[in-house]
Length: 335
Ligand code: 5AD
View 1 (spheres, rainbow, N blue to C red):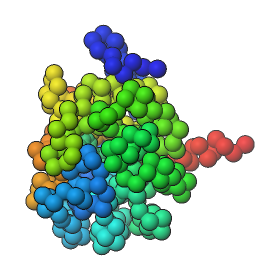
View 2 (cartoon, helix red, strand yellow):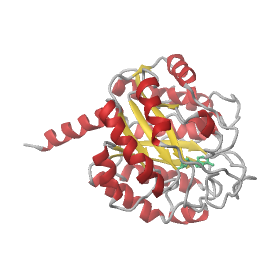
View 3 (cartoon, rainbow, N blue to C red):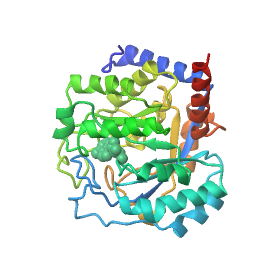
View 4 (cartoon, protein in one colour):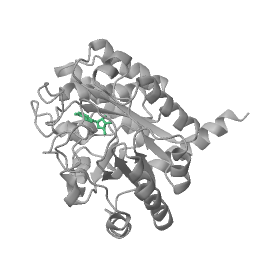
């Protein structure tokens, strides 16, 4: 098992191994996905998240179909192969916006379509697939039931896991994730994230360093160590060379020894997915997962981080990559 607390030479070696494995599997390419944060209403009350329902200081919004559709169809960055529609857990935005927008995008673009909408009623998942989405992002956040309760993550860990399994069983490509450095996380909790990730039917996993959000009960807690998050990314790559592992924007928010550089370093430690934020500028300041002073990764920033890491944008979409993998696995199972 990789040493998650490695520093200096051993850390350099761990990251180099992550980088090399990603290069061997993905040929120096990384996926480029856009994200639109379509609603910041949320029925959950996670202790770590600024969009929690008890946060009364947040102005809530739901974007509209027409605000987004034309712009995405005609003006999205050319390198995008995929788009993720993300929201707080807000069943209303799913009906009013996400389903019609997915249908519009399916008809008018070849984009791979991802959604990250939390745990929804089981009848909604097939509707999202029929509308054109094939990738579901559902993070388990932390892998031990007691810690999950302690940080007030959504529902119970078992329910969350059951939704991941159901989605995968129903043919979704599922990506999950956890937060490194969450308050109260023991070394055992941290290791269990790897164990759970390895046991789930997922095709990708993110690692986000904990960022203490201003309007949350955890505002006074210490920020997660970016080195730990980067080591987790490299270790995940070593554990599952074929997974898609994103470089998340929170990596640039931790300060640390080299402030602002976590994102690029993740790409040099084995991450192979970058996200361009396409949320309309008028809405962005209210989508506060972490802090109000978020970093917005626009097209230029993301593409130069990729180039600096010696990577180029994948021409295949993530959705297509995963669909092909499924077909190949089915073929391999035929004898
Ligand atoms: N620090 C790090 N990651 C966070 N998330 C939410 N709040 C925080 C935080 N304070 C992550 C969770 C959630 C996703 C939308 O953002 O993993 O699922």
